[in-house]
Image (tube, rainbow, N blue to C red; front, top):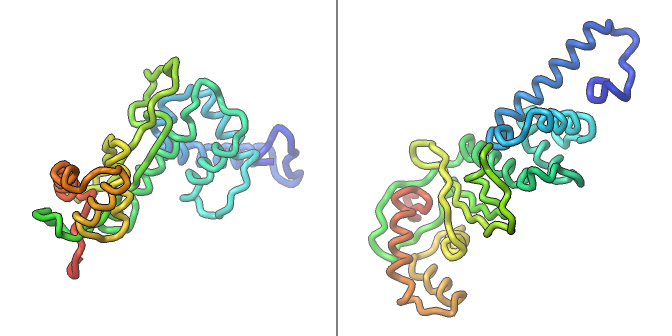
Length: 233
């Protein structure tokens, strides 16, 4: 009854006034938690549609976890399984995923690794554990209440999400080549090893890529997207 009051009768041994309080508290807690978790999405959609989604989620979704903190992930799973979403918001799933990445990175217990300066491509480096590589169909980082759906499909959006040393979560706009370079840095390796493999994939020479790649990696090391790897890491 609490999940679907329109279709299910309430228990006969509970006062109607008390049951109404339970229903309101149950709904308000879930709605408030989702609103705080999906701030970008909540800003874009109208209130009527937002509340219809929350009601539908409560009524139809079967959560896989009893933990309240997992409700945002369950809500995203619910959206991914919806067969009919409002055509006004074709970016719903991606925008909600974008919001969740921000939260996940902010609360991640991982540490960024040791600070340092990249001085040579011989140095072993790797991607920070506080980096998430994101590719979307929609420019989720630019979507707000004034966003207009373009007439033609937008270009793919490549984002590097990371938490810096001041515990601030940032999103950097990237491109397929840089994205691929960071994918290759999941495990520690030397800069030269990385560039040689990247050059082979691009059917190019390592020498032609080395200068620009070094500058990019140097910037990433300074910002904490890439960290130095060594015995004291």
